Image (tube, each protein chain N blue to C red):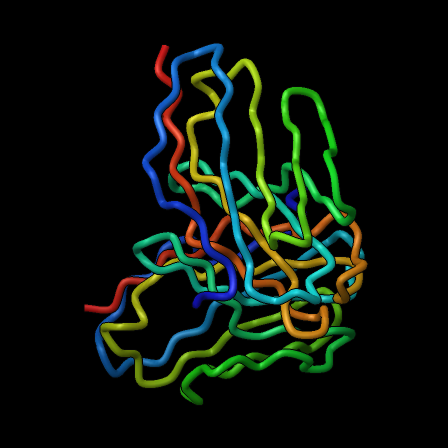
Length: 111
Length: 116
């Protein structure tokens, strides 16, 4: 099992819909979770971090963490074409000092 | 103004050559990283330096040698380049390097390395 797994997609949603991106991880001791967005040909940029179980909201983005299920997700409300990108999940593994990335989920928002 | 800058942006070279990629950050961060992103977008950590000291050294061929002359710089030298080294190499920095670090990583714009 990979340390961090994501459905590679592609995921397509119509403009205005909710996009749901999921990530699972292998290390029960993981404490920190990040979501990055990467446009084609660009570098990853941080969208959100989450450390505690439950939901964390920032504008149209909501991160959800369930440590018991080793699952973290990102919801994008009112999806816009500009949200079309690859979304990368990053999780600290093995004692906290290393962050592993998933392979990313490609999202396309259709106008 | 660029927070994390890498040079060069593109690098095309022949197999067997030796090349270097430079990275500099002006954020005052104390930790810097090299990541490799393959054609399937998988980002894999290679090295990490905290205050100029190596703290992470993943299973990377010893043809790859990082050097950190100071906290703001982390360079990557690659000897005897192979076709499989073709990828995008990202430099990143952070303040702190533990699970409690704030704000994650700030990435550079990447260096697309093509070995022919």
